[in-house]
Each structure stands twice: as structure tokens, then as C-alpha cells.
Image 1 (tube, rainbow, N blue to C red):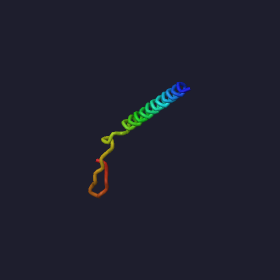
Image 2: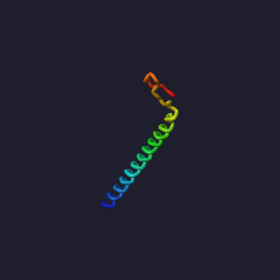
Image 3: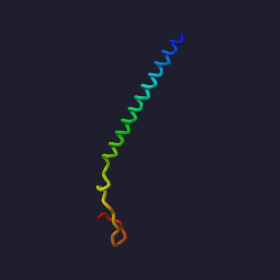
Image 4: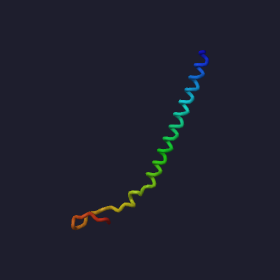
Length: 61
């Protein structure tokens, strides 16, 4: 009976390790997609800079 318990524990451990591995892979893929989305956003230099004019209002250059 003890060899059967050891075999079951080993198989259970392998299932848990595989689950952790797949979860880590999925999370890393989601993070990479989020990074790529952030890169696709407009760059700061594309946004006009506002300067105060003689009236005191802020206007683009």
C-alpha cells in the first residue's frame, strides 16, 4: 500500500506543478499583451504643449 500512496502523491505533485506552470505562462502572456497595448498609446510628444498667453488662458503652441 505505501508504494501506491507514493505514486499517487507523485502524480498529484506533477499535476500541481503543471497547473502552476500553465498559470504562470498565461499571466505572463496577459502582461505582455498589456505592455504592447501601452506602447500603442499616443506618445507624449504627440500631445500639444499648453502655454499661457497674454490673457492668462492656456493655449496650445
